[in-house]
Amino acid sequence: MGDESANPQLQPRNIVVTGASSGIGSVVAQALAANGDRVAIGARRGDRLDAVATHIREDGGEVFAHALDVTSLESIEAFFAAAQTSLGAIDVVINNAGLSIPAPVHESDPDCLRREIETNLIGPMLISRQVLPSMIERKTGDLVFVGSDNADNPRPQQAGYSASKAGLKNFCRTLAMELEGTGVRVTHLRLGPTESEFGLSWPHDRMVSVLENWAPFGLTRHLNVMPASVVADAVIHALGAPRTSAFANIELQPMAPIQNDEAP
Ligand SMILES: NC(=O)c1ccc[n+]([C@@H]2O[C@H](COP(=O)([O-])OP(=O)(O)OC[C@H]3O[C@@H](n4cnc5c(N)ncnc54)[C@H](OP(=O)(O)O)[C@@H]3O)[C@@H](O)[C@H]2O)c1
Image (cartoon, rainbow, N blue to C red; front, side, top):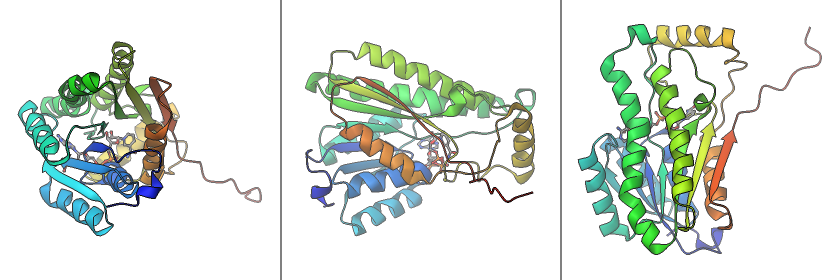
């Protein structure tokens, strides 16, 4: 077990983290397990997911790993059935799985556009629908959504991604209204650039053209990124906050490089 004194006011919670095979999801899952919670982690790449689970267990944490494709209702149902059998009722879901496949709309592949919306928007909707009845019945629960500053500052060559994250933001607001008085909270994280594997699969030429396209719109003021641990800290803080507010909208941005006064 993780260090329970790290989370003294709370019983260990059963927390699902989607997209935990790399990047932000893996760091958030490890931090929650180290905080004393039990985590159920899901993603498509089983080998990477198992590596994260092994790491958590070696650190003394409790983890259940199971294949999950958030674009498939069948996979979502199988994942949650297995997670509940292993851990018990789910207290918290961190909807983190997401991807971006950049291209100008007129050059985009229809299947890629569909995948972005299905992964980043429809997936979290289906997962919420899956877990909410039990949370509402128990009058407690937390749904956390990993969104993006793209929701309000859309970027060229990311039309599908920006639309999915804008939709996710409004989905969170709708949920918060629907869940008023139920005891279930919603947290939306609006992340700026964060260290992860996001974009690593983009071809180099595409990455260069994306950055060139963003610059005239003031969207690449600097190239600093935050460590994913910043997101993990924010998640732990949001989940530990007194249950007196129903909706949190948290923006996290990396600090710009410190200016050197002596530079010419
Ligand atoms: N990094 C940033 O700068 C940044 C900024 C704003 C928002 N975000 C958001 O942060 C979240 C995490 O991304 P990341 O930056 O950590 O990138 P990442 O390292 O590429 O991680 C993405 C995760 O999503 C999973 N995933 C993708 N499609 C999935 C599917 N259909 N079903 C289940 N899991 C799926 C991947 O696992 P598998 O491939 O194994 O399925 C992986 O674990 C995303 O929602 C992203 O939009 C990132």
